[in-house]
Structures are given as structure tokens and as C-alpha cells.
Length: 353
Image (cartoon, rainbow, N blue to C red):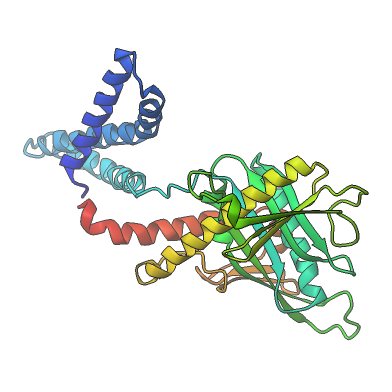
């Protein structure tokens, strides 16, 4: 059972915020308003929970009455499963939030083993995420795309902007494996190829400070099979971060916009380096979590001959390959989120009771 004192504190804090907003003339109105909005659904759930407890107490008080005992027992049996469900909802609401969940992301996909077939698979994954982005109403912006000679993708970087993008896509980082007969295979043999997906929460300037002395900016012409655009002006921008050796390019038509995009990507990659260091330091405590961010981990297999997609982290297999590659990822992502929450709930059991 959840600590009643803790639940009372939630209601008391909500009432405090409500009174503070009603007083007006707040310097921190925006911050208080956001906290109030975030806390309101939790407070409402707590109020419903208390009413259910009150209902059970009222019914128990009638058990001593012979005439009311049967009805009281029925009422208790009716309320108990609702109470259990309500408690589970509150436990989920009280889980610590990932402060990065609301952020937009930089998506990077690269071929792994499999040569040309892996490059084609990168194209499939890119289209899958593009369609999922459209279904969620996010803005999908292609930053850099390098094509292979046969029309696959050697590497691609995209920016997905919208509400809670990272909260949904953070489970996608890792090695995605495909099993199918390549179009270039004359013998009909199934090949196994792979691609690496990296989902990086977009970094703000306050997260990472980049000194101008640490970067070298080169302009170049976006042309040939490797560029997103073919033009005759030096609009493409390449930024090299000298201390880390990270190189970022952007090939939009505007050189000014390319500088902005490249700096955004560079900040995000440097921020991810810091996050990965922290991940390594906390690796023991995070081993149980789904999608810990290790991009060397094989997370999913797409098997064309069987029409299935298997996520190896949660042992989930769905026989809806076509729908998933068309952007219908919600069932997979929901299952991954539920598994992650269940593990967090188990870890929080001691502190919540």
C-alpha cells in the first residue's frame, strides 16, 4: 500500500501551488504554472484513491449489521479491484521522470554488417521513423544523407522535433538486424544484415558550451552521390571539433542555416558523449533497464520470410512486419515502456511503501 502520508503531502503541495497562483503577481508564474499542471493529474488520482478507501471503510462499518452484511461485502468486493488499479496508476505517476523525455532528438542511422544490403536496410529504417514521426505530428528534417552507389544509404542524420520525442524513441538505440533475401541474391538465400540506430536527445546551449577555438569550420560544395543537394555554391558546412575529433556536416541550401544545424548536431553528439560516460559509471545499477543506450546491443530482428519483428530485450515477437516498417511502432514502444516502468516499480517498491 502506498504511504498515506506521502499522498497527503501531494494534495497539500497542490493546494499550496493553487493558492500561490491565485495570489497573482508571481515572478516565477511560468514555473509554478507548469508544476501545477504536471501535478494536477496526480492530485486528481490521489483524491479518487482516498474516496475509494473511504468507500471500503464505510462498507466495513456495516459488516456488523446482519441486514447489511451481504450488501457491504458485495460493495467491498466491487471496490477492491478498482482500488488496486488506482494504486498502480499512482505508483506509475510517482516514478521519477527522465528530464530528457520532452526533448526533440537527433537520429543517426548507419549500416553495419551486410554491405549493400545493410545500406538498403538503413533506407528502410529511415522511412519507418519518418512515417512514425508523421503519425505523431512531429517535424522530420533530414540533415545529412550519404547514398551508396546502388541507392542505399551509407549514413543519415535527421532531426525530429515535437512533443515528447525522446520519451518514445529512446528505446530505439541499438543494433537492428534484418533477415531477408537481397535483390542482388540470385540463389534465393536469406542474408543477415544490420544497421546501428542512435537516438540522441537534442542538447541545448546550456548543456554544452563549445569554445570557438575548439572548432574548425569548412565550407564546401554539396555535389555528387554523397550529398543531399547538388548545387554550384559552397553552401555545405563541415564543423570539426578538434578536442574530440567529431566531424559534423550539413548540406542544406543555406550556408547560414547549415552552420546552425551543424552546431546543433555537434552539441548533441558532445552531450551524448557525456551521457555515455555517465551511463558507463552507472552501468551496474542500470543493467535491468530497457534501452539503456548501449548502441552495440542487438535489440531487434526484422525477419522478412516469416513476416515478424522480434524485440530481444523483452522477448516480444509481432507478426506484423509490413505495418511496423510502415511506421506503426506504437505497440512495440508501448511494450518497451511498460517493461521499463515495471522494472522501475520493482526498484521503487521499498521507497513507495
